[in-house]
Amino acid sequence: MHSASKLLLICLALALTLTFGISPLLAQDHEDHKVIVVGDLHGDYAAYRDTMAAAGLSDRAGHWTGTDATLVQMGDIVDRGPDSLAIIADLRELARRAPRQGGQVIVLIGNHEAMNAMGDLRYVDPGEYAAFVDEASQERRERVFQANRATIEQFFAAAEPPLDATQAREAWMADYPLGKVEHRLAWSPRGEIRAWAGQLPAAVLIDGTLFVHGGLSAEYAVHSLVSLNQIVQDGIRGAGDTQHSPVLDDPLGPLWYRGNIFRDVQAAAALGLAVEGADSPDQNLCESPCHPPGPGDLPFSLQRAEGCPHPANDPTVDGEDCEPTRLSIDEELEFVLAAYGARRMVVAHTPSLEGIVSRPDGRLIRADTGISSHYGGPRSYLEIHHGHTHAWERMPGGEWQRSRLPEPETRESPVP
Image 1 (cartoon, rainbow, N blue to C red):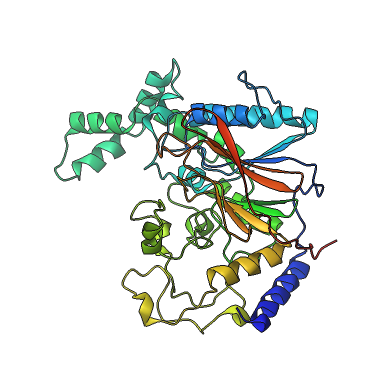
Image 2 (cartoon, rainbow, N blue to C red):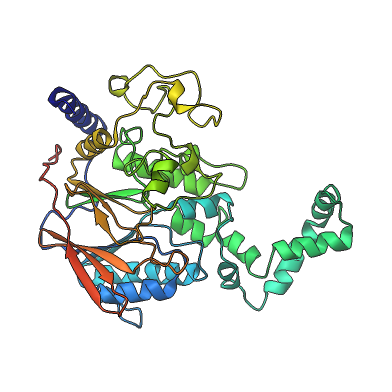
């Protein structure tokens, strides 16, 4: 990137910082502060418990042993595995206990938490429903069926092939195993887990490191951290099966964005990276998306063209038919870091099955190693302490091994 362009990016980022009054959240600003980062867990309690013990944050009984350390869990606790409820309960208890020793537990919101809030249950493991079963589950499910019987029978009567009343009941019961009613109540707008998820941050800045589940696009970096978190939290709290905030499934939003790593699914495949299903927001992220400027988009001075005539998510659009309108990966990372006065960014969401990896310049670290049994990646955690950054990984023999990661250049925060 030309020095003049780089200077423009930094100046615009600083202007946004001053305009929006961005201030670091939860910043400690001393190198003795220890930060432990744990990536996506996806319902694997055994992997979670082993990782927490290895990091010195909790004992086998679940008590906080991290003294004044900060745990940042990067989101995606739920889906793909059976033990999401147990992990959530444990993290909530640790969040209550840690401050007694000067520590803190920060859980970020991930795209799978958002999917559960929106009623997208494609990746819910049957064990997640079973975890909610109690002695009243059979009766509770029957009451729900009876209260909605006419609608259910009408729905299946219009199916192809049509089902009679007996068949409709059997089909609905199969779709609603015991525990699913309770699961949906817990994730409903008035449910306890939805209330918990609705207060989780989308991004935090600690000691110059910016943490976000998916990534941060320049389009969203125009928001302060306070504003960004509020937008996502409002979306989570207000989401429903038929109504939700677009930020929750925006491919450029902080829960889904992978553009800090790659820009199309073909590039992801070449890198051996795992992405979501064919109908997920990941599929809308292309190298040169048709993304005309609009409210909340990139400042026009950062656009590379005036836009193009088709929406970004139109599958009929060939990316070669329109001029690129987005910053390159390097330019965007420079813009985002400067906007928040951060030295680097840590992301999850995109599993790196070979272990935690960092850019050579240390400005981006991928902390998700697919530690759940669904992916079969290595158990791992990231440790930032005494000005050094280490990736810890559990070896096949069971021992934990650490490796030093590069440190980014120091970046002074533009806000006192």
